[in-house]
Amino acid sequence: MSGRSSFAAHTYRVDAVVLRTHKLGEADRIITLLSSQHGQIRAVAKGVRRTSSKFGGRLEPFMVSDLQLVSGRTLDIISQAVTRSSYGQQIAAHYDRYTVATAMAETAEKLTDADTESAGAQYRLLVGALASLSRGEHSSELILDSYLLRSLATAGWAASFEDCARCGRPGPHSAFSAPLGGAVCHDCRPPGSPSPAAATMLLLAALLSGDWAVADASELVNRREAAGLVASFVQWHLERNVRSLRLVERD
Image (cartoon, rainbow, N blue to C red; front, side, top):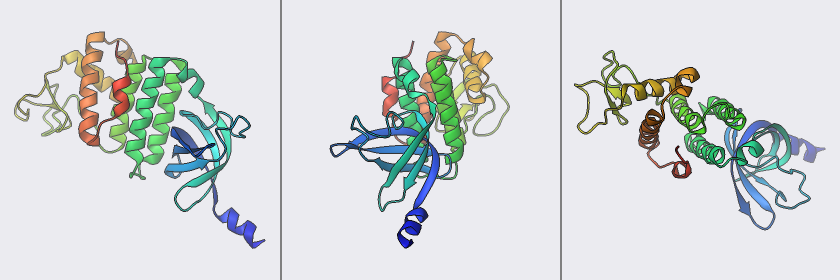
């Protein structure tokens, strides 16, 4: 009886999305998860690489599952997995969606590596972006840039695309500075700051707020310019590269 009580005390359930997997030994995998209740979790799925595995495809990247885990010293162990939302197949069938989902998952992993306070919000944001991506509701690149801006805002780095990010002077302004937080006025503008087109700044504001009517109607030239600014903003505030962004093909 005491053994059962001890096991129960170290068992817990979470809703989680699979961010990344890598091989362990001959048949196991280490699964990096983002959960709604406990933030980022690294756990072992034993025997998952065998054809007879009880997990099937429930622990592939971008899958959302109801999991039962057993706490371990360094890595927890996944004992049960029930699929909640199956986005992996629809995403993997399209190269553009797959590379975008990989970049989003890598960003989520970096943002929640140490930040537990915003993990629940980051989980909901990522699951929503993956759902939209799997259904092809918008351009994959627009979904990515919207996700990147909103995930950084959730982590405490909200960009400004109208008022000056440094002094608050009402905009719109014609310069952008990633280190200062977005749009900057003439007086605050650091030397060499880019001057995006007004339509690009409107697109960036729409991506941050989720105004898809404006985002979907944007021109390709503005999408390209916005993507470059978003990438620089992400790299500056994360203080490290999101390597998967290099794989994303821009139209």
